Length: 591
Ligand SMILES: [Zn+2]
Image (cartoon, rainbow, N blue to C red):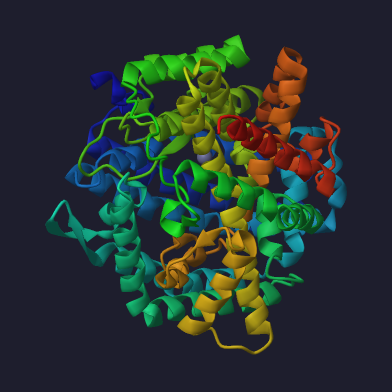
C-alpha cells in the first residue's frame, strides 16, 4: 500500500531538521518585528492602515504555513520518531512565542473597532468585513492586555493542567480483558477498539471493564471537571457574558436563538432516534439494545473488505456523480499523495484533514483497515479537502478560518454522497441495511448522543449557579439524567456507564466549553441541504459549492439564507430530521 502513504516533502523547501528549526526561529523574529512595528499604533490606524495590518498578518500565516504543517504532520504520522518529536516540540514553543508577541493586536484592533465601528463597513476592508464584524462582537468581552496575559498564565497552570492530567491519567490506565481465552492487559487506546467488536459478549466485557475502572478514579475526574466548570463560570462573568454559553456562540459565529431552535428540535424528535434504535435491535435479533450495541455492526453485516484501490475508486466516483470538478479534486488528492491511510506503529489514532492554503489543497490522515466505516471516514475527510479546495480558491487566508458549525459541512455532505452511491449499487437488503445503519448510527451519535452532552454541560453550570457541589456522584447523576432524556427506555445501560463523562476529553479542553453542539448543528444543517439536493438534483450542486467556497467570509445564518432558510426557526432544523426519517423508512422497507 505504498501509494497510501502521504508525501509531506511538498510542504517544505528542505527537510533538513536544522534548516527547519532555523525557519521556525525566523518566524519568531518576524513576529517580534511585526509587534514592534504595531505596538501602540493600532489605535490611530485608518481603513488603509487596518488593511495593511490584516494583509501583513495573512502574509505571515502563509509564509510559515508549510513548515508548521510539515512538523505537525510528521509527528502525527509517527509520534515515536525522534526527529518528528523534536520538530513538533520546537513548533509548539516557537508558535507560542510568536502568538504571545502578537497577543496585543486583537485587543487593540477590537478597541479601534469599538471607537470607529464604521470601519467594518468601509469598502477598503470589504474582504475582511465578516471577520471584522466578529472582532467587533468579541470586543466588549476582551479585558485589558495585562488581564489577558494573567488569564493566559492562569489557564496554562489551571484549566490546562487539569485537562493535561485528565489526558495523561486516561492514557496511562490499563484494563484487563479476556480475549479468546487469553487474559490481556490493554491501554485505553486499544481496549476501546473492542466496543465495535462483532462478538457481543466481548463488547459488554470491554464496556464493563473500562467504565468500572474509570469510576474507581471518580475523585480525579470530578476534581478536574469541577475546577474547569467553575473557572469557566467565573471567567465568563468577568468577560461580561450573560451566560456560560456566550463564549462558544462567539467562536462558533452563531446566535443563541439558533442553538435554542436547534436543541428544541432535538428534544421534540427523540422519538425518531428511539424508533431507529428499536429497528436496530430487531436487526440484531434483540429485544432491546444495550449500550454496547448502539454503534456495533450488524451481526451479519457485510464482511466486505474494501482494498485501498477500490475505496479510492468508490470515493472519487461518489464525488464525481455530484460534480465533475469536485470529483477531479478528490482524485487529485490520491494522485498527489496527500492521503495517509497506511497502518503504522506510532501513528496517531483517529483521522483528520489539514487544509493547505498555499497548495490550494489539503492533507488527510486515517488508519485504513478496509472496513465500511473506514470508507466512510475517507469520504468524510475528502469532504473537508473539497471544502479546502473551494475556499482557498475563493477567499483570503483569514476567510478560511472555518467556525466549527460550518467546518463539518463538506465532510458530512460527502458521507451522504457515498451513501447514495453505495445504496444505488447494493446487491441485496443485507448490503442496504449495513449502509443505512452506518449512516443512521453516525447521525444518532452526532445529533442525539452529542445533544445529551450539551444538556449535561448546561446542568453542571446550573448546579454551580444554585450553589451545588459537583462531586463524582453528582456529576454522574447529571449525566445519566441528560442521557436518559434522549434515550428514554430504548436502551439498557450498564450501571458503570454513569461514569461515561470521565473519559470525554472535550469537557476538559481549555477554552472550549460547549464543544459539542456544532456537531449537532452541522449534522442537521447538512441533512437539510442534502434533502434539497435530492429534490433539485444537478441544479443544486453549484449552490453547495458556493456555500463551501464562502469559507468563513459569511456566517452560517447568512449562508442558509441563500437557500431560503432561517436557522432561528425549528422548521429549518426539522428538514434535517425529515431526511433521517427518510433513511429510517428505507431501512424499514428491508425488514
Ligand atoms: Zn470532520
